[in-house]
Amino acid sequence: MRKEIAEFIMEAATNPIFRLVAILIVFDTIMGVFRAIKEKRFNSCIGINGAIRKAAMIVSLLFLALADTVLSLNLIGFIPVEVWQAIGMASPATIGMAEFFALLFIAYEVVSVLKNMTLAGLPMKRVWEYVKGFLSKFTDEMPDDD
Image 1: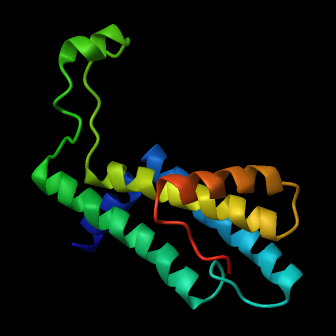
Image 2 (image 1 turned 180 degrees about the vertical axis):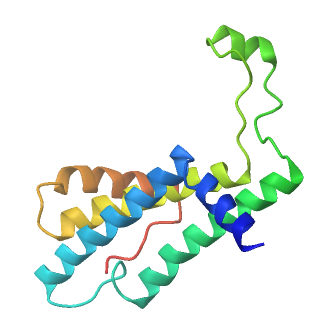
């Protein structure tokens, strides 16, 4: 049983979307450390809440990958084969729940990285102000200014 679990985790780790999530989590943590050094206090990226959030992203991706394996869901399976062929793909792509949520996690982490880079003093203020304005205008999900 342990061998099967390890093999499943190793196979999931080869997913490029999952790898991008992991890279962004690490990069966001690094930017959070730089920000904490500048502000001389913990922040939402390197405190316990940030650690729990980041670990939960990884665990949920593994759980959703398992659910995708069991359920064989394809969230973009409704796109006709002719469309895939027209864009040059031989067979339709598969996007399961895990990949869908991984894309959401990527978007979340990119915003967090930009925020931390700006608050750490890196020359990202214009980019962050644009992202912040966009999120404030089109969503109710703008994170607090911590």
